[in-house]
Image (tube, rainbow, N blue to C red):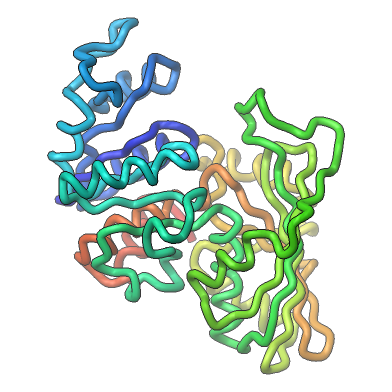
Length: 332
């Protein structure tokens, strides 16, 4: 059993912890806590062991029992998945080095923190690394579909526009509320980030933020090396793991309806870890390919974190890890 700790129990951390609990080859040693909140209360109710981040704490208020210090957690783990806010992980890396434990970081960190990772794209190249960085939700979404397209048709270049959600649904501190905010730095950071996973694909990205909380949307225009037809691309995406085709013909016209669909099919928390491509938006013109895809920012990187744990330890192939994770999380 791979012993896993989760440092940071927020939007991603709590989902990664739940996903680890589903794996038959992993043991969740515990999670960290900074202070009392509803997430920590829920973790205790689930029987998850809690380790405070603040040195010297022997207990947390409100009846939360703790299992030891953060150092106690790390020394009991084979791999730590760091889901702390942007910037904190770089500081934590020294702690992991001290304990000689492998660590997984999130996409908010610079790519220098560890080897960038998307399971279906570069699992084998990253396997065995001490430090792995699961790239951001947007980068993961781009990599999943671009990797498939490049495999079948070859890609000369990509232009992608990302319409980004303003905040997560629980987030009361960020916006915009009544504005569309363009990212005035070109290209946006997403294109260069894609190339840390898929270095041979030329990608230019722009982004803007809009007043929604449920998902991101990507509009892609791809110059192909080999001409494609719409039916072929539809079949390709249907056959691609962690990509889900959705249809206007079935009443799914918006990101809101995708999230309602996720609830109806019984996904945990109503999440949609797969990248959703609208079938009706797939089109070709000469050697150009067009499509729209939606990315659920709270959940699409969760299976990647699980696969990254196996990659770090080197216990199985990428294909086997993806299969295990998909089966445990009921993913396509």
